[in-house]
Amino acid sequence: HYAQRFSVANGDSCKVLFIYGKRDSRDTTATFVLYKGSHVPTFSFKNSYFIKVPVKSIACLSSVYASMLDKLQLLEKVVAIENADYYNNNTILQKVRSKQIVEIAKSPEIDIEKTLLLNPGLLLTFGMGNPKDDVHEKILSSNIPVAVTLDHLEEHPLARAEWIKFIAAFFDKSVMADSLFSITEKNYTQLRNLTDTIKIKPTVLTEIKYADAWYVPGGKSFMAHLLSDAGADYIWKNDNQTGSIPLNFEQVYERAGGADYWLNLFVNVNTKSDLLAFDERYALFNAFKKNHLYNNTLHANEKGYSTYWAEGMTNPDELLEDLINIFHPYLLPGHQPKYYKKI
Image (cartoon, rainbow, N blue to C red; front, top):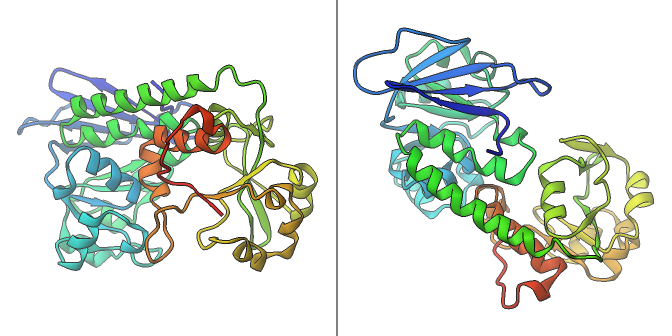
């Protein structure tokens, strides 16, 4: 209903997942034919991959997928992850410590030997939608089925969350995924409706300068949608980009120096002093002076990685609730934040 990067077709003997990996078109870049039993379908589509379901085990190369698998009660299927440093899920971390789950990508590159020896029933990763381009050829030439997701390219918060349906299909859990997503959608819609009649919307800036550029979310991005639905006036709302916009400090200050609020500062920013340690000029911003600084790191592991990046992407209704509470707290009396904290 929301996701634009995959679709599902249900047949009599199988389910087919279509992936659309090209940014500007609906061209199919990969097709996953999911079947049961021993009868392999004889038809095929462009770049077809045939996978028997339910999958028995999975190498899960993103904490976002692990969060979805957790909601689907499928964590016992996980036999490998990329890097435990990115995780907050206690079940996953305990299994890593007890060697029940193997880390196969501690560095940017996947450990081919470990992966082949493990031989998972499915390798779930992300990229641009075509396993031939996104996955090492040695993995593809093995018997390991590979599925590539594109949730990170979706523009709407509910679109990203809807990828739980894609993952669920490999485990014959589509009915459960539909039910879980319906709850998320209902909650999100009810929260968004709270801000429909708001007349005065605070202006908002996000991120900080990283290396040589300040990457602000485009006006059609996931974050821009969230801020709009939360009753905020995002500074770059009229920009047509879906990804991030690289700007320099002066360009950001010129447009957003007077913004009312400033969000998503950086993983290790817990105080105003931490922020100024990156650049003393941050003190010039109106949001800094007004103490309207909020970071998405309320719950983070010892490496600084927040639950925002896994659980938040899976539960955009919870993110929206936190943001409404920041901008319009009178709408949600008694709300306890799940992801955001004041700096």
